[in-house]
Structure formats: C-alpha cells, structure tokens
Image (cartoon, rainbow, N blue to C red; front, side, top):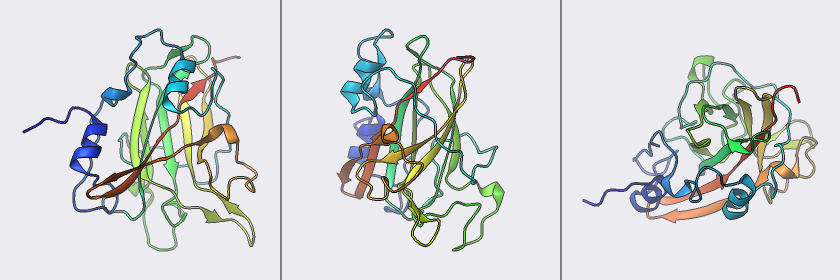
Length: 235
C-alpha cells in the first residue's frame, strides 16, 4: 500500500471527508503540510514566502486588526477541525504562518483562537435553526503553531448573515493571535470576490484571500492561505 505522507497528498488521493461529503472523515495530523515547508531554510524572508504562496501582502507588514465581534467565547478546545462531523457546507482548509515583524522570523507556539458562523451565517451561541450549548464549541477551535510558525485547520466556508434590513456581513473567519513578546492581534479573514465585501464597514482588502477549488472523486473542497505578522509588545 502506498503511504500518503502529506496532507495535500491525502486530500488529493484519498478524498475529503470534511462536513457532509461522504462518510469518511479527514483527520489532520499534528505537523504542517510537508510540501508547505520552507525550502530555503530558517532564514527565508516572509516576503519570499508570500510571493510564492499567493499572498495577502507582498511585503513584511503587520497584519491589520479588525473587530472582535459579539460572538467570541473563551475556552475553545485545542483541535485542527472547527466543524462537527457531517456538517453541511463547502469544505475548506486554511493554512498559513505566523511571523514576528520585529525579528522577521516565524513564531513557534503562537496561539490562534479561531471562530466563525456555519453555512447559514449562524454562530453556535446565536442559533435559531437548532439548539446547542456553550460547551459544544461548534465552529470554534484553538491551535498552536509548530516550530516553523505553521498552522492549519479544516472547516466549511462560512455563510454571510444579515444585520439589518439592507446590511449584511460577508463570509469571514475571526482570529485572535497571541505570542510571547508580541501584541495580541484580533482580526478577520475575508474571501476575495465576495460581493458583500465592499459594502461591509469592517471589511479590509489586506485581509481578503484567494480561494483555490480542488476536485476529488468524493467531491470538491476549497483551500486558502492566510499569513499573519505580529507586532512586538510595547511598539
């Protein structure tokens, strides 16, 4: 039997079991995707990594902050999968690297707190279609970056939701990132070409990423890269 050694290889060969595609479940191992590893060694500058991987920025600049929003809940479990099994929606894999602006180097053991709405635009602590408890932590997770600052998680593409008669929030994913010696960053990830981006008062172009669609025998999923640059504490 041929051994699949990378997550990307697993996704392309074994098919995707995230959300409601088939009965299989995709389980992400603990380390980074092997073919996302730094081919130029420890001293590779972020600007080179960003240009190669399809960046949200093209220079070493701090990631913009964004609103915390009303739906954050502390204490999410540490895991690489935000969604319950067989949850409806388009499967999505997000990966990236956390960097220090001060040292121009990746940040190991940075903590990412990530949360989002389901495909209907509902947060688990504000649902109307079904009842959940705060302990369920649906669409929420925390994770640590590895020794090279990499992180990766699987979820589904979040739905937009309406705030008023004519006001919508586009699809987005919330982030809170913490690392020793650095300022805590609260921000949001957006998706390019979403028609609801520009009317949204919180939307920032630097936080919007490209999405690649990947087809397998079991269905289609999306992938995206979201790199993060933190400022040093006290700056």
